[in-house]
Image (cartoon, rainbow, N blue to C red; front, side, top):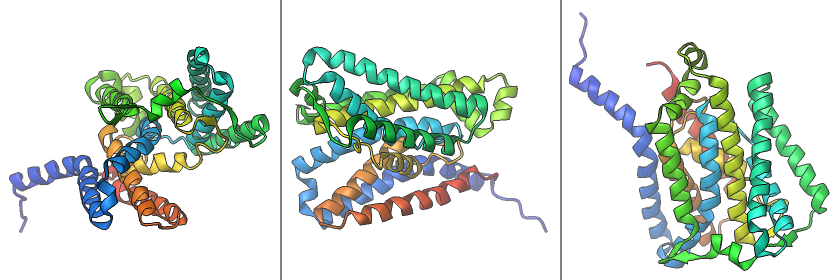
Length: 324
């Protein structure tokens, strides 16, 4: 005897399967905030909350770029070294002069574009593996950093530039409106424009996207260039925060950005996910590490959490990419 499933139940299951990946990260974030407040009264202190937002800003910016690359089925593990290079070049070019702020920004953005185009040429045009290629870039840029700086901090930035990270507007860090603007703009691009929806098409099935007239190489190239440029912007924010160029400023942010994207529900392999989940993932990670600091838990535990988060994120959301 064949049992026919209730159409209403089927619709409800499909509706939940659609919204769970979107709402899930935010529900986890709410629970985490409640737990953090219970574990440490200092968590809800306004100064601590501002620190959380400041710490989250660079990671949020670079994770937005990582979202684009993972959406198309790629990955970029070079973003940490791009961030470090940005702080080194930025500190050197600015050299504590307000007149050099604009040339500094233009210089490092140009570097980001060059790195992104390099990845486009190798990964998209030639067909090299994305992980191996961007890992090679990471090592090369780290080497350039060390050769140029000798491992020592390079120059300082101006007090005016530091307001980007340290200043506040009505008690809110200045950098937060910048992050919000980037997130909203990128979310609108992906969800509300035909160009943005092509990222999902290419990540979901590149061959089908090409057959339907999508210029997949252009979408992939855009993703890699924007990822590198956003890493540069994250580096500028970090430079404003630490006040000097540092060769290891971006260390670990490549893994943090990947973990944030996966926690936020973007599928490792492309085609599903979005900006909103990534922001939730960034806040989850930042709050976790803030709790560790408040409870004086060893920094080595951070590395364990990152590894577990990446593995669990892949396991959870790889199911979404399987055919129903």
